[in-house]
Length: 84
Image (cartoon, rainbow, N blue to C red; front, side, top):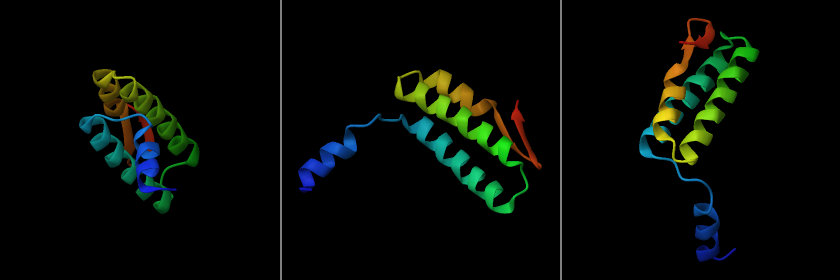
């Protein structure tokens, strides 16, 4: 695939605002750590992941404040995950 075509393909997807990208990256890293440590039930990790997908959709739709509120509602740690 030529470089220009590859660039067009890569930028065709939804773009994320910097605050969304930052929160998303922090959460992905925490999910990975808990997944490796196996200290949170897999069903809880899945629920966090699906909530994160909802936040990504909101961000991609331009609803940044809503997306950040969703990210902020996720509590992951101490052997369990739950909404704040």
